[in-house]
Image (cartoon, rainbow, N blue to C red; front, side, top):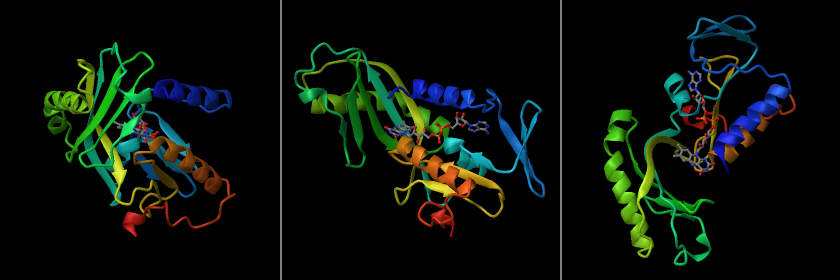
Length: 222
Ligand SMILES: Cc1cc2nc3c(=O)[nH]c(=O)nc-3n(C[C@H](O)[C@H](O)[C@H](O)COP(=O)(O)OP(=O)(O)OC[C@H]3O[C@@H](n4cnc5c(N)ncnc54)[C@H](O)[C@@H]3O)c2cc1C
């Protein structure tokens, strides 16, 4: 899946259904009123709503930390195109359950994406300090599995990565944030979790779903 096209497609679809979108608009604070919440943006505007969904990804943890969330740093490289994949059966996707783990897959333009080798830090400077050595280690890991493929990294990055202690995503509903829900689609299947949580949240807000969803609502804080 191309994440950029996916995100742009979702936004475009929402826009055609009259959703108003504001780019480059950072949230910086909020005020609670009787039946509404007012949010203030860094460019001096405000948004008034009956219900707010925080879909800030891992940044949600700096607004309302959830005890069940675990943030780490992860690393990834994309190689130059590879001429011969004959030693890689069917170019299958590989995702290790070992710790530390790596994952590998190929791209339509014949590159290899290799990622993993996570570090337990959530400090950006600390994460980026390891970037060059992680790039080299990921290539070594590739060559351990595919000695016939000799290739250089063309792109590489370090990124924060979020999971949960019990492996399930979280809908955060907290007393100190009335009329707000934190959508924390953390974990290896974050994209799938995002869709599942979005549908559950829609049904909760429109009154279709009246269950108490113990398994997805801030379990770590109760
Ligand atoms: C290295 C890596 C590999 C991954 N691999 C996979 C995979 O293979 N499969 C899978 O399913 N998932 C994977 N994921 C997880 C997946 O990317 C996430 O689950 C998904 O992006 C979560 O979507 P989201 O919309 O909740 O948050 P995000 O995509 O993080 O979007 C949050 C948005 O909120 C914005 N924001 C934050 N703070 C503010 C603020 N104060 N004001 C305004 N805007 C703000 C951010 O700029 C961002 O645009 C991976 C994640 C990482 C980091």
